[in-house]
Amino acid sequence: MANGNCKLKKATSTLVLAFFVFTLTAAGVISCKKAEEGIPQEEVVLEEGKIPYEGILKVMVGKYLFLPEARGFDIVVQANLASEDLSSLVGRTLKVVGHFISDKPSVLIADTLELKEESGEYRNIYTGAEDVVLDDYIDLQQRDEFEVLKDLAYNKNEGWEGKDLVKVFGKLEEQEDNISVVISDDNGRQVGKIIVDGFADFGQFYIQKLRLFNEFWFYLEVKDTVDWATRRRTRELFHAEILFAGLF
Picture 1 (cartoon, rainbow, N blue to C red):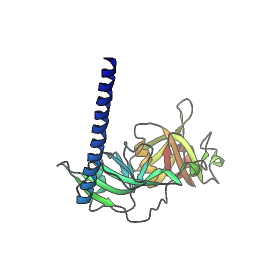
Picture 2: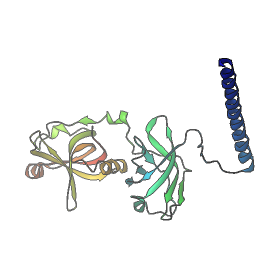
Picture 3: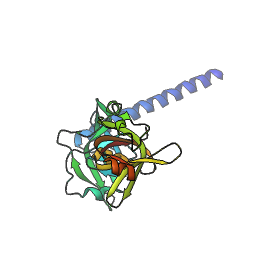
Picture 4: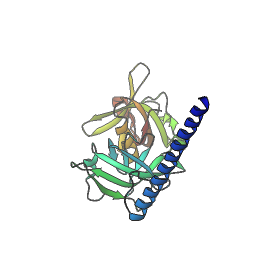
């Protein structure tokens, strides 16, 4: 009786194996037939090195896009989009396919952008064709070149004069047509203001990404010093352009 059970188990195993082999063979034949006939496959295979993301666009400044789903990447679009108002894209769903470059691993160069319409269909609005120019992008190595300014005060202009690239911790303040970075001491007392003459696109891009924070680091290019009388009266120290902003 035991011998009969053994034979039955062997026969069952043989049938299962034969069915498994037949299924794989049939699937392979059908897949090849679809490929030969031009029938699209369910699984989309991208070109080597291409990375896809899909999500709601949160920030767009100049050529820089922030898509939360593309964690760790600053997405770059090199050319103008096809008949699109850039500001209208914020808050809308995009499909992005891009690639990264070895010397700037945190940058994702967009190859194509597709915009989701109200119908649910996607429409291509950008296909990359130009060489990428990252003229204002500041990578991690470059950020180390910015000198931290400490103990700022209106009567200590030697602290910033003669310096080109500096970083300060503070908050952005807008009053009418005047924008400044407000610097406070450890007790929260204001010790000075830096007048903002302008923003690099990359700097503005990161300020918008950090909109949920009140204070952060500003990476600045130092311009002219404010005259002594005005410094003493307003605590405005010097003019600068914001090149980048970050939490460290």
